[in-house]
Image 1 (tube, helix red, strand yellow):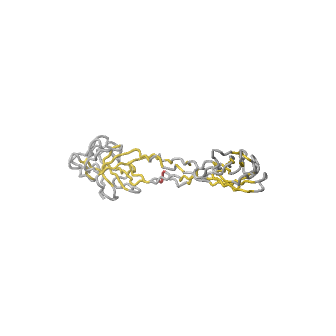
Image 2 (image 1 turned 60 degrees about the vertical axis):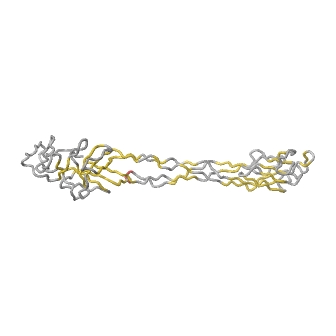
Length: 344
């Protein structure tokens, strides 16, 4: 920012722009009225001499060549960008059915668990794949005590065996640093008035280049480094904070999938009177969502073989998580300006 020399506030070190040599202030008798704009000096700890600052939207204009051609501070405020995360989804689970192997014959009708019931195993082999098996066959008319062994059959439900759902990420266009825009921008334009035309009324006034248009949008502003919360001193009543850098710390939480829910296995267990699964006489439907299935049978029937039919795995679904914005766009290198209203 311009905090330099004027003859109304001389300090030291004035340089003649044409020779590069030290140049004293002209005598008071030769100093004409300020050719720019007389404005109040800034109070401590603000900058003493105001600076010419353009504030607005979009691309800043060129600095006015006639009075303040050089660019000084440039900053921005009020970031404006939509940070979008990828959409998290889950593929359907993959799995299969584990067929029941526990099948229990009762000497009583369903539910077959009375106190006088006799139970006989009709289990399938371990890791049964559903093919015809004569394991634990029961011949017709087999008795258990005073009556037939076969009056009902209870079959355990099948079980679902499945893997976790795979994460599916649907990308969305990502913002690059150049696509972050700001609602407000600022540009300081540096210049000076003629040393022979700096006279202002009053000791607290200083002659600076004019903020009068063209171009419009310029203000006379005093400034301090950092984000200053103090009230602005009059007549520099409009407070603005601008930044020169930013750190985009925004990220997205990783996508994940919960455990599968709602998957179902169903099958039919066919019962045969012979050991080769040729003569079917009963079919019991079982489901992983139901308790063990009890089915009444003809008293004294032969149960010599069994097979699984119409085995079906129906996948459920997984609930996705993640894909949520995290972090922030952090603005850095702040400068606080207190400005007079624009002369536009």
